[in-house]
Image (cartoon, rainbow, N blue to C red; front, side):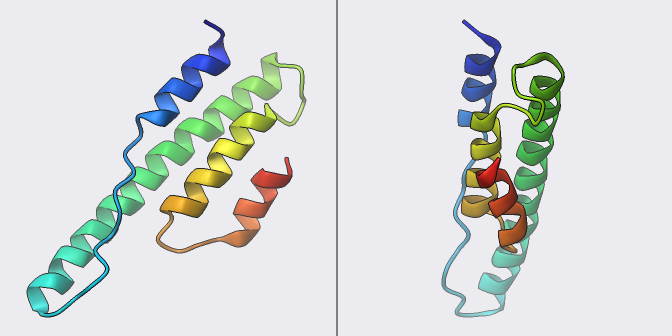
Length: 96
């Protein structure tokens, strides 16, 4: 198994939990706030992992900018899981 396959397997097990969509009362708002904090923590964890993998692949791989597949994984995760969508960051990684 190559290192990219290992990174992909780790990436695939990072949690992807949707945020609640409806808020009817103060309890729902509290749950939403809690879910938002958890989502930001998950995003930072996965983003840090993938950025480290990209840095590693740039140093030891064929592409000096890092493996394109790793950039695509990071862009996909940021796009699908970010609570505050940053299209500049998403576009940067999709282009790579």
